[in-house]
Length: 171
Length: 223
Image (cartoon, rainbow over all chains, first blue to last red; front, side):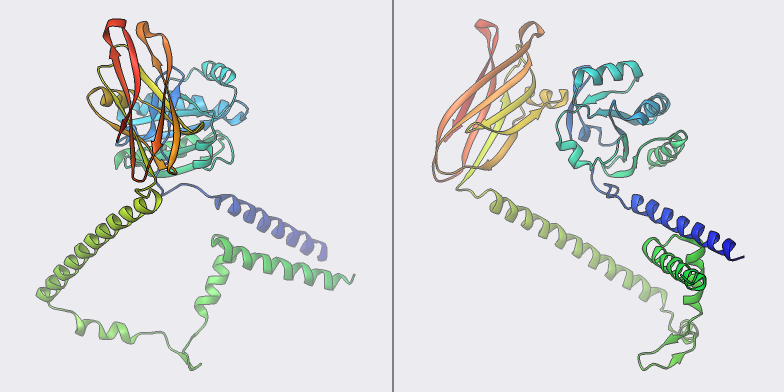
């Protein structure tokens, strides 16, 4: 009886600790509710794109890196979202933070995504957007305010993106 | 260690952790529910220390105090006017703050402002401008197609606003883009200037040199 009690208490303690870890993750600083910091970057096709020029449209910005394993899963999912919702007013931008531009281009080419890939080699954008883990995806509403932010990607997360996107497109 | 004491310690630790988790996150469902129930069940205590019954008197008094519709609409109007007045005050305050900030950050005596203009642009498609003052990069600006078009249509852009000490300074501007025959093109322009007391205005000008079929880059000092 005593062993059972001890085991159940230990399990309870483990659950409490894991919930605390989760809550500390959720409390990581994000830009949600704040104006999206503006940036201008060169895209892979040579044109320069500025975030503020998409004001009036819903923008999904995906910060990715070649070395972040989740990016390989996330980019095709974002490409499908872009294909479906671009006509409804959604803009998808991929921002590579890889310092090695040649390898970043190779990776993006291999992913064969239809949305623009922007190349960033500086540190300003990473600091402005508080990049802590890669990949990171944010959603910016028509008024330029960050409404959703998420680190990492696992299968099924695109449903959460879609829910948010539909809601923002309806506004 | 005594098993009873060990169990008591673990239970004590778990309870403390649960309470802390409920306080920190507010989402620990089971623990939270238990705590809430305990809290709601507790009687309220007045400052004098005497417990009181739940407040039922406020609900009973409410119907007799219901205002007439006219009075309500008048109140709403007054409230609306107050809100509008407050909004105006906020806008005025914001304007004053902006002016104060400009004056504090860029005092007129040390201010240096840099502008970019583009004329015709047949031989040059602007991509970016990098500005160095006294060999220190102060601005690197990437132009989108829209921004370059705006410059071609006569727009003038304030690319930099900063402070400089009185004395001699050197400014170098690098222009990158596509030159004649859409070749990659990078040119620089330099100016040495004397910063006196008072604001300094400089203009980076991109013009077409038609006889040579080349773009021309110059810096104008607006004294």
